[in-house]
Amino acid sequence: MLIDSHAHLDTPAFDADRAEVIARARAAGVELFLEIAGSDVAKGSLPAGIALAEEHDFIYAAVGLHPHEASLYDDALEQQFLQLAAHPKVIGWGEIGLDYYYDHSPRDVQQHVFRRQLELALQVNKPIIIHTRDAEDDTIQILRESWSERGGKEFGGIIHCFTGTQKLADAALEMGFHISFSGVVTFKNANELRAIAERVPFDQLLIETDCPYLAPVPYRGKRNEPAFVKETAAFLANLRGISFEEMATLTSTNFKRLFQLITA
Image (cartoon, rainbow, N blue to C red; front, top):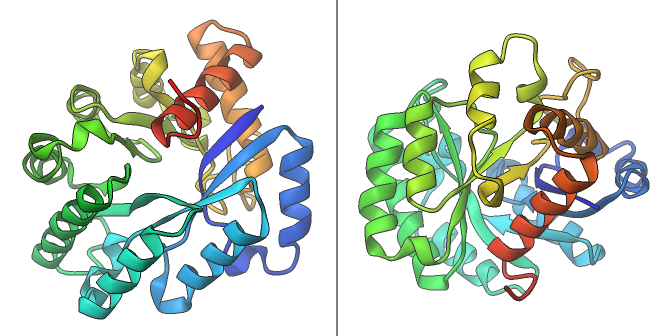
């Protein structure tokens, strides 16, 4: 059985056939999904994502403010996040972090909101899901100062849709993070990323779709959906020299252990 550790099923891309998408994933062997409920707060992703988790026993949720929307952060939104963090289906805080590629929010605001959300995740004892793009040095520094050095390694987290450098991977692994690979690792021009994927310890490895974005080969360019996580699992299994079944089992076990869905 597979786990899609990062999905955006609440997005309008799935409005026409969401039930069918979920059914296809289940038929493909996807046991669990992690719905990132706070990825587009301005457009209502929080209630939509939580509703999905409430409707399906195999969907869990994470809450948090994406760096694109950091300028929206205020006391009322923080209280909403804290209330939702107590929901029995909310198992993580994210995706949070820094995005200097788009700079939809000022960088100093992104950094402040990132640090604040790390504090809150520590308060509620939740693993974190990290988004970082073109911001590796600041991401590493903030994670060390505001997470790792304050006990965050106990709760762990994920560097999601990893597309960074070996420097980021090494720093994240040292701080106890899991590295999650999306369909990007299957792309023809992703040789450097594959070299990193070959070295991630098996017990810190995860897979995801980040759907509806970044569909893996052979679906590249099409709308991504959770069923396609099977392609990423198969690709990584071949890359690492293990069977598909072994890859599915180890990544699923890693996810469940991180989010305390099984006893160690």
